[in-house]
Length: 86
Image 1: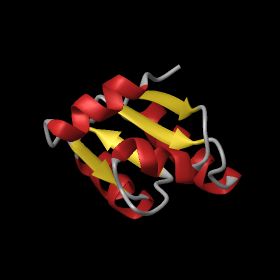
Image 2: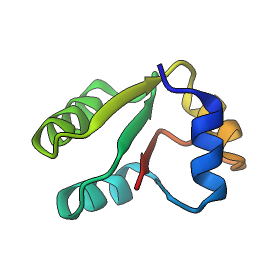
Image 3: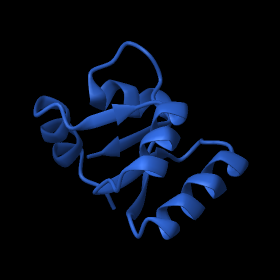
């Protein structure tokens, strides 16, 4: 399970990409440390991210909370469904 402090420290050090589309683009070009998704991400989107994480041999974690809660952890005023730690 992913720790909230890990997410917040990555955000403070500016090593995070937020958003499903941006994350897909980054994963296809680079190899991130970790992919984190909210537990209410639609199944089709989650399967695509899981597939890309297996291809790039990247750790895949499901955040134990909704996209709104993940947005709060990230310090954003909007829901965050997907984030990648560079």
